[in-house]
Length: 504
Image (tube, rainbow, N blue to C red; front, side):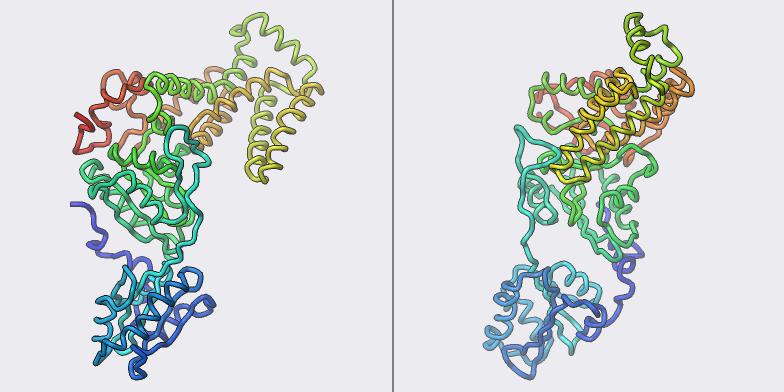
């Protein structure tokens, strides 16, 4: 049986809104939303009967005024003339049974439910005499339209991407997995922000233990607001202090749906135009959506290229510093003479050159990201070409140092995941410092510490270094070689899926 948050001793309502434990009334609601100029209220009479007063509340901007006028106010005043009611309880029953033209109606007896509905685009009708309310969904649907992905470019796949509206995102996923087995469990996170988080998984494919564990961690998340993925990630992952990402981010619904069909669990957060996936391994951050659409030989070649780029991006600057400072005998004679000739008039050591160039590239990258597009492109061109060329001609840095650092940076841009790329940038600088202290021995010690750290990491019970550490035969082949689609008979055994077979 899947985890149900309502069976916990401390429910989500008790954790999030302890100050709203009061009777439902218009005065209490106005007190809660005091100094909120967007709170709109209107008093009407049931069927224009002056003996039966109803009070409507909504938050301007979060609702559609046209829907309130045509689907709520008009039925309450005109249609209900032919439906007489003796008391407020009977009025509530008649309205709830279909007098108002809205597909979604909720009967509320707790004030915190009323407050939550108001904040999420509902119009609330208060019945003062019985301290109850009805909520009608009249949410404002105006939002950014579904557009092409900006970070994960699509060549053969779908051209749509997630947006900031939760229900639009869940619909994009259901369009691809049209099955009742696709489950959606929604919770609210944030004492003040009241952000909706939807956990999606395919029943029978996702491990029940992983679903339960993730749901418990979401319910235990007690923060003021959930407005960024970093807040969610640092609270629910196993090793939040690790620099390596442990939740995969994607803005593409087709990739998100593929992960669900593999037996993983997805998270969609209202207000964020991306989906989160768990559990994940380091190998998943090296995959791109195009691998699903390309021929298996092409996908294999590109996968090998990405892993080669990963190693070059991490090791090349450190290897150059170590050999240039401590192990010159490893450099071919002609290349060594060329390096010596280029460095004769350079006043800085090799370590300072490489570290300075690495920091300069990071500054250029951040400047290009933070500035508007035209200015950012101009700054990148000026920094990479003009300043770099001027530094070489002025004998401030040697050409070989620029080549090594630039090659490492370009190799880092090949990595599909920006989160993994950020971790690689930190590791690159750390290994350069290790090379300065101990040469190749320092680099080897740094790599040993890196492997020990990776071996320690888990993602919801799945080894972070799988398939290299899962004990199955031929791990390197399974990591790099992509099988033809007809041979992919079984799902990843590390996910502990009940349905092991994906095709006959």
